[in-house]
Structures are given as C-alpha cells and as structure tokens.
Amino acid sequence: MTTSISKTDVVLIGGGIMSATLGTLLKELKPDWNIKVFEKLDDVAIESSNAWNNAGTGHSALCELNYTPELADGSIDTAKAVKINEQFQISKQLWAYLIEKGYMGNPEDFIRTVPHMSFVEGEKNVEFLKKRVEKLTESPLFEGMEYSDDHEVLKEWLPLMMEGRDPNEEIAVTRIDSGTDINFGSLTKKLFAKLKEQGVEMNFKHAVQDIRRTQKEKWQVKVKNMNNSKMEYHTADFVFIGAGGGSLPLLQKTNIPESKNIGGFPVSGLFLVCDDEEVVNRHEAKVYGKAKVGAPPMSVPHLDTRYIDGKRSLLFGPFAGFSPKFLKTGSYMDLIGSVKPYNVLTMLSAGAKEMGLTKYLIQQVLLKDEERMDELREFIPEAQSKDWKTITAGQRVQMIKDTDKGKGTLMFGTETIVSEDGSIAALLGASPGASVCVDAMLELLKQAFPEEFGTWQDKIKEMIPTYGTSLSDNPEMFKEMNERTTDTLRLKSHETGALLS
Image (cartoon, rainbow, N blue to C red):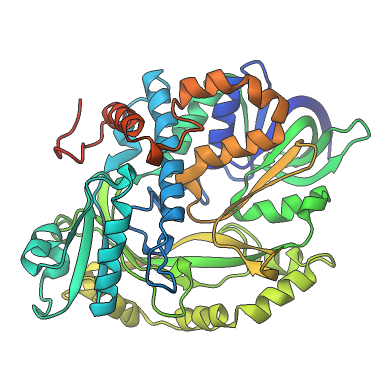
C-alpha cells in the first residue's frame, strides 16, 4: 500500500447538500481558496440528499404542525415556524442568485410550486388549526394561507383525500399555494458540477479514516482511496464534516472538546409510494397531519406530491424503522462504535428518558403492510393496496447531548458543531435540515471565521439581500424579495396562482 501527502485550504467531507452549499458560499467569498471534497460513494447526493432518501422537501413551516405548539394557556407559539420560514427564504435567495449568474440552468430541475396544506380531524384539532392560521397570518411570511372546514371546498382542494369520506366527519385544512417541492439530490448535483468547473477537486470512493491535529495547528485528514487501496494524507486549514449520519463518528475522531458528551440515535424511515398516474394526478399538495399523542415529531404523517427526475409521485409516511447503521451504506457496528467513555452517561440518560420513543419504534417496526395502509386510509379513505409500494428512505441520526434540560436530551433539529478556534466544524441532526442549508452554513462560517465574516458582508448581501434582517418585521422588504425569487425560480405567485416569467 502506497501513500501520498498533499496540502489544501479546505477539506469538505461528504457529497451532500451541506458540503455543496458550504463549498458554493466559500467559492463566492474566497474564490482563491483551494477546496477538496471527499465522498466515500461513487457520486454525490446518494445518501441523505438523495431525492428518495430525503423526504423533507421544502420545510418552510407552512404546513408542519409540530413547529407551532399549543401552549398551556391555549395560545399558539409561532416563533419556531417564523424562524424556519425566514431560514428558508435565505435558501431561496441564494438559489435565485446562482440562477441569475447562470450557474444552475433550469430551476424546475430542482424546485417546483406545490401547495402546502395542514389536515386535522376532530373538534379539538380543528380549533387548534383555526388558532394556528389566525396567528401565523399576522406575519407577511404566511400571507395567502386559507382555512376551510367545508367539505365542498375541501373536495376542490383535496379530491383524492375526500373520496369516500364520511360527510359528517369533523375535519379542517389550511392551504397556501406558495409552497414548494424540492429535489435536493438534483440541486446538490448542480452545485457540485459548478464547483468542479471552478476548480474544486472532487474525490469519489475516498473514505475518510481519521482526522488529527498536526503540530502546526492544522488538520491532517487520512483518506483511503478505495479505487486503488492507496492511503492519502491531506493537510488543511479548515475541515467541514458534512457526512450525514456518518458525521458523528468522524467528529469523535477529532478529539475536540466540543465532540464530547454527544451521542447519536439512528432512525430509519419507510414510505408508501404510488406511481399510478390515475391516482397521482388527483392530488397536488404536501399535506401534513398531526402526530398522534405520545409520538415523536419525526413521526408526523404527511402525503406529499413529489417531482423526482421529472416524474410525479405520491409519498406517504414516514413509518419509523430501526437499524444500528448511521448511513444506509453504513455498518451494523455504527451505533455501538459511537458509544465512548465520555458519552456513555449521555447515551444511557437518553435511553432512560426516551422510553416512549423506544416503545414507538418497536410498534413501528412490527407494523405489517396492511397496517401501514390503514394509516394511509386516514388520509385517503379509498386507498388500494395494489397502488402502493413500500420504500426505505435514508437513515437519520438524531443528536443526543447534555443541555440545560439535563443529560441525554434528544435533539430533533439541525445542530452545528464548531471548534473553539473555528478550524473544524460538523453538521449533525435532521429536520429541517436541507431546507435551511444556506442559513446553517452561513452560521457555521460566522462561527468558524469571525474576523473574515465581517469583511464578507457586502458579498453576502449581494447573494442574499435580506441577510441579517427580519423579513417578518419588514413586509415591504419581504414582498420585494419574494417577487424576485418567485420570478427567478419560476414559481407561482400565491396572489394570482400564475407562473411568473
């Protein structure tokens, strides 16, 4: 086995949307920096960013009910929903900027307009939904959201879901036409294709084995070239670990203090998929329901129109599964291998706290196909088993860490870990994930490069004109920005329903 040694400015580990986004930002901010990407598979966007593995597509809090909890006094807390929507607007602005520069071709290859809807059943949930839409529409970000509990209106909005439904059933739906469906696999490929044109070195079938500090305060990344079994050593000033579920084991190898007292719990997802055109063409929306009492946020049922590689499909789920792997292409030893002396108490504490989650996962794993169909029939009463098949989506590793809520808190969001000196960073966690990738990577850059970040403000504002401003508090700025991004990304206006050109 032979070895090679090289130096670079930046190493990006993982060929997913996060590395693609960070690389894109860095090439705009520091075009002279040398960047190398290492991906252990034979192409980009095969794992978490793949369209079939990444079920959360266009998370902008328009329809996700778990982002607007009902408080003890009966009021609705919309802070998280507003924040996520603001973050999504940042993503749209960067994509529009890249389209305007001619970097990414036709936006319809990765983003399309699909209405976002929330669907609830029962008197209590109907009241909740009424209060939710009243509170959300106080913000310009949710302008155009409609509410109805009239079955005749709902037959127009959701013909497939209303067929065969009891006319006396108490249900309600909110609809907003400015929602989107995003193929993050296609987007990732477009970003990396441009980065390659700009001189970024792409290395496939290169598995990172170790990450260590050098005596000169740089990072040495040990990489196995799986094409020829050659071992390579790459020294870099800055390393980003964006390997999806594989990020935690690599972060642990760095031995930085920020990697301690952190664990991960893998959860796999199953979806029912329908490709039958007669069925698919009767539903055009992403419809989110409400998680059952005691179920975790990851279990929120939703029926999604998806556009993948130009073809329209319906997905329903998720149904949780369990595998000790941290990636679909990972090892059955991933979970055990991630337990270290410094995080074992964190992991055990989480296990003790999350007995409800454990029970839920066991119940989900034991579900039979027809039981999954019964859950689908709460959305589509006349759904036929012959029209639907089960697919396995990507692995998600929910982050566990010690917080002010105690040891072993299970985190359900996206977490950025940055070393004190800013020389190495990692992204952990899951939803809303890809949808807020631009904001997440800007926040990472702010932490990793605090001195340079100030000098980058003009360029960041060129890419994202509203960066640093609350759009919810500035309706006119939001309107101007939204018109621009809607036009550039060829989305439909919620005001007219027309495709802007």
